[in-house]
Image (cartoon, rainbow, N blue to C red; front, side):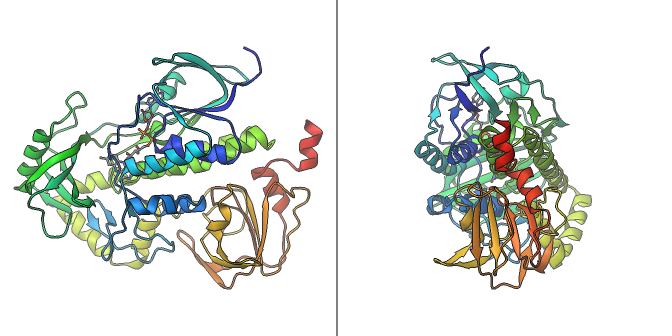
Length: 504
Ligand SMILES: Cc1cc2nc3c(=O)[nH]c(=O)nc-3n(C[C@H](O)[C@H](O)[C@H](O)COP(=O)(O)OP(=O)(O)OC[C@H]3O[C@@H](n4cnc5c(N)ncnc54)[C@H](O)[C@@H]3O)c2cc1C
């Protein structure tokens, strides 16, 4: 094979993870080919919402304006829960404490549009069928009607739980098997219940009735007396019968637009990277959809990986930067698997589970317990090991109000360009060596004397912060100190401009 790349990055799979990654890469000027095995989008609703951290990530790129009109925010006692036990997360320090009810289909449509605008339209009917790696790149055989070979510097498998890319790369997907089955339908109801039903436990399982869109309800029934059979796709009549058996009524359900089933198998890729092949989203982790964390974790994977690939491909950053993708994101997915396993265990029928649920429900009145769970379920407390000693380093930067010469702004708004941002607050001017032009330096006034950070608590406002493109803090300082900043720039942006030029 020769060393000339036809492409920088090929992405297999145009679900939410692949789409978000394509947008991130295009924003950084990377050439992207986005392939999907389907012949067109199915329009299946699938996931029913996005959480606080995903909303923040979309907001960091100015995408919330596109997404918000297609969803709605639960008012009052929100949909927050752990294993169906309601929890109010109103105290969480985020602009989006309640999450957004929106179908995965709508999220995909918006990201698809944005990816196309940025120059990465989906190439449909293009399943990755085989791959071969060498030291410079990956050669990919694409099947489908337009079979072809493509070469790229990197291939990212965002091709879902049954990922072909993961199998071709020989990456194990170990975990626990399913112990139950959930079935789901989006349908209209002739006789809906008053309000909505988060979870009601009856006999062998539980059921839910949630408003999804005007006139449409999301209906779910979980059964612990049977285990998912992937070979048997349930019909609407199967769903109705199972729901009625548990709920004692079917609320006059009719006109389904989607029926599906899911289990609680929980598996995690043993590696996220095999040389020039990486995995993201469901291709790297699957679990029970408790608390709706799957799509969110995938979008957050993409936000972590995109800028790193761009820094390695165009910024002179060492390949080792890509290893931080696995060391940062795999533990996050492992924690999601654990909390969904815990939730499934708490959903099992029987008096012992009932006693455990009652005990936990009492603990949810404690602020600290609620905030700890909220930080975890909404991925707001994620901290990466960035090797800097400041308490804020590694956490996601809070969206604090700032004043810049042009007027009012806020931290997340400053991340729209997808570039690293050095916030120089209240007159501190840290020295940035010869990294000028490669990061955005923003001098701002910050009136808040304390910053509130899920997972960390309230801390005195720092004097300067280096924020990575994914919104995580790479370095921070108090007072007029800039010790460690050049090391952080070198680690997360790439070697100094002089060192980079000397190497070329
Ligand atoms: C009932 C249910 C409810 C859920 N609710 C929520 C929720 O509320 N919130 C939440 O965050 N998550 C939820 N999830 C999980 C969520 O749907 C998934 O985590 C999400 O779809 C993962 O996105 P992805 O892009 O990684 O993979 P996918 O959405 O599976 O996309 C993978 C894409 O890859 C394509 N593909 C497959 N093979 C190939 C190949 N060889 N080559 C090229 N392309 C290929 C597929 O066609 C597909 O388009 C729910 C899941 C279920 C089942």
